Length: 241
Image 1 (cartoon, helix red, strand yellow):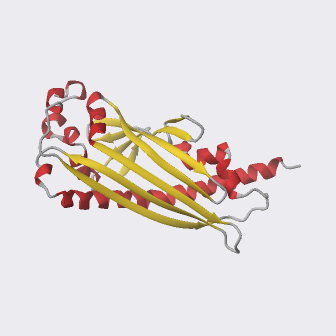
Image 2 (cartoon, rainbow, N blue to C red):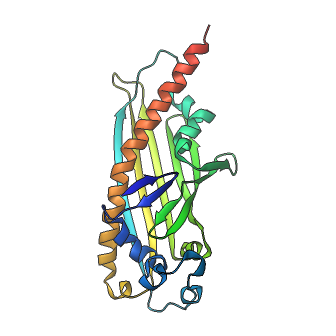
């Protein structure tokens, strides 16, 4: 589980996250390295050639539907998603440390720092947002960790991809918004004792952690998106003479 600590987030053992990070980022959780200060981490050990590595493919998916509020503003939901305010709502910029536009529909989002044991890392996500008249697709095209040299080395050992496909129907008596989120993570297992485990064991544990994460976050993000939609429509109503 992630719990807030000031303007950072701290990983706790409660939802199996700490054991999961042990094989996801072994050099960050190695007991010998953990006892050292971050400034004096044994980098030479991290540079050793790794043999007999394995690759685990982790997956999770979550589909959620919520009722779309009926407004008298005359503004359709697709107009909201094409508006800068709607884009910021999709990116959930209120929870980000910072974000910037890379091109017309791609954004770099830097999340608050995550504390993994004695190390800090800021997740950096590149997201592509493609709104259309009847749907909107959000793709995570890059996921990296920003931090110390040791932390950033872990970027060479995993890759992640996410797609959030949003659809809606406003032409029925009960309009709705539906999101379909799929998350994939390729993880290199390259240190003992984790290389001794069957790949299926790593994938089973990792899938449980990722599924719990989506089950928790997707409904919250969808609820916040609808709150932002209500706020946007009310602001437009307020300026109509």
